[in-house]
Structure formats: C-alpha cells, structure tokens
Image (cartoon, rainbow, N blue to C red; front, side, top):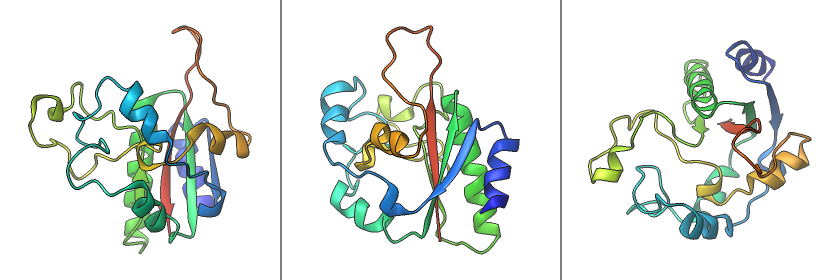
Length: 166
C-alpha cells in the first residue's frame, strides 16, 4: 500500500490514506443531494440517474467486498481523478484485476451526456463518492481529512478520489 500512497503524493496529492471499506461512511441520502441539488442530474455520463446505474444498496454491497480503499486528497478536481486513474492502472498491472478508481468526473470540459451522446472516455470516466451513496463529508472527518462547505469561491477546495483495492 505504501507504493500507492507514495505514488499519489508524487503525482500531486496533498495526502493519501488507506482505510478499510468498513471505515467508509455509506449513506444513501447522498442521492437526495444529487437529485435535488445538482443542476446536471440526469445528464452526466457517470450520474446515478443514468439507465442501468446500480442502486446505492447494490453499490455498497459491491464496494464492501474490497479489502482496502486508498483515499486521495487534492485541491484540484481533475488532479484527483487523474491520480486515481493512474493508481488504478498500476494496481491492475500489479495483479489486482478488479481495482477501481472513483472520483467526481472531470475528464471533459462538457460531458457528452449533456447533449445525449455516449461518454467519450468510458474507459476512465468514474462516478463520484456521493453518487454511489457515500457521505464524503463524514468519511473525510472520520479520517482527519479537511472538508467543509465553502462560503465563497475564493476558499481553497478539497477534492477526494479513491481507489478500491483487493
């Protein structure tokens, strides 16, 4: 695990911590914030409103089968996603065929889903924590990681991605 933690930091992560799936706070109410707080609900290619997206109960069951979750902290959304994808690929090459990264997708300037098109980056696009029923705020707090609602756009942002590992 130290290899992946060091890799995350060398790629620009502020921090990276390894936890067990039981240390992730699952709460399906996060989907309420998606449905009634996101102006792109139903449009994004990684959105839980898309046809075929598993329910939060199904996703929790799947995710809890992993042994370790590497939480990656950055101050940049795209960096968080890029780091998690690199680590997922490295874990795959190391023999973890089911390694899976998760981040708030930032691959495209505008998601193809907004115009009804298929995802242009289906191999690397991933869902966000909250969209699969994870309370990011409670999870970050539980592990001493910074995250709070921003009162203005000038405040430093904290972005989180994860890589689920066996």
